[in-house]
Length: 214
Image (cartoon, rainbow, N blue to C red; front, side):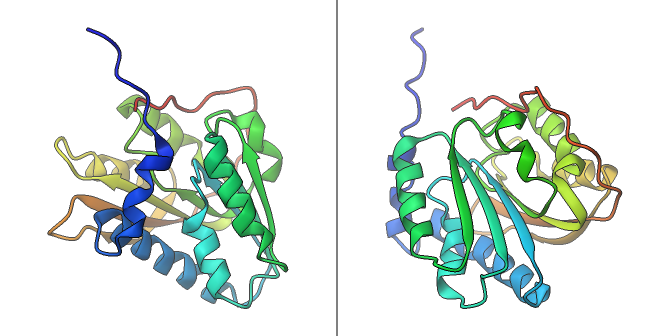
């Protein structure tokens, strides 16, 4: 059997053009939670880390529509060069936000280690594209990414076998309190929001957290 062709991630983003697509609906949920988080910060300095950020719209779309993003220091990590170019172009329009878009494999801790701990960690489009073992490893590492009281927003399809119950249980076991879990009945996506209630841990460099399987 020949190996599957690698995913065209720029083509994967095309459903965003349809506001009724599941991908657009998921984005709206993620952006709403990001906006709520920013509102709750009240203008306090905020450090954000987005892994496998794509073209950055999970965060940048929210910042673009808000006028109080001058205290945001964001690091977006993406491997696809075309998506990186788009994210950087969008970031350049946000004159008062500090946004760096790193081109590289977000699974490699050393690439972004100097930019943690973060107050908001985005894992959107990550947990559904890696093995169950890598999901568990990544979740167990989150305390190294998170500042005191940090928020994590994550996504995962609920297609069979549905791993979201195990993800929620793992997050609880790693010191996170659930803030929200949205799973619309008519689509398979889910969006989770958890707040870190534990003690931040020093980041361990020289590791790979996961390998994309698609």
